[in-house]
Image (tube, rainbow, N blue to C red; front, side):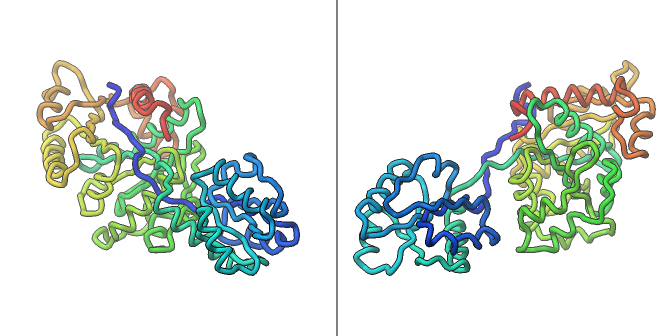
Length: 394
């Protein structure tokens, strides 16, 4: 059962470079204002052009801006030493009165980017951003696993399962993990109510941001629930689902995966081109069904659609909600598996009304009863999920 969710984090998104500036004390004052611009994790070390640079000063550095003075042989020796210590490091030379002989010397040392001394804050910021954009094409960070949840039909209990599974994973993890839930059921989603999140921020703000959307906006819209889960709700008004831009939505999910350790996505039961794209880009899709013919017929149709668009079978898992295993149940769990053509990943028993009471109050069912059968079955799924991912996240 180790491949239950078959999660991976093979894709990536570029980030701005962590920048270190090394220059003489007379120059560093001009570099200081750049720290308030679009540069993160800026470090400045006041060192003369002939002074050595230690490995510690280069720790975690992605872009180094270092003063180079051709009048000091030690300055070029220092540049060569830095290249030996960090051959992978992007380097920009800070030079005064650059001429062709100096630029040729820099090229021989493998440095093609230069900025003028004294530093000009706007120019320096622009150069850092330009190099950061170039690095982003080749330098990537792993994305968190993402799982899409969808009910074969409406009122399958998908949102309740997703919320409780997320909380169970966070509670079980030995290391703190930040889990984000995204409600893409744009016309009837109620994730905010399930998590008792009261906010006027929603996925709509991110969709409307178009090319301006970034991780800062993701952090601003994602609201932390009292249980520690981050929530990006659906809009309070009904949004025409055919107007959603697929590329924009995929970019939002990608940014959320770069920001958080685990991303769960609540999809609408009605399939659109963008919801299919989100499912295809997710590491796994969990289909929630019930033991009745309408659900099973619809689930079978959905799986046929998945095959048509190229979603592989091993990325799709089935959960039977409100399951009954009694001998008098007309449709058994094996019947479910045989009908949809997939192994049933888990069966969640129907409780005695405690879950509905908890949902009405925006609480987890464990806040009402820790012995609740729904909670017990969710915890069993979380244990298998944890086994599949190693630590429940990135």
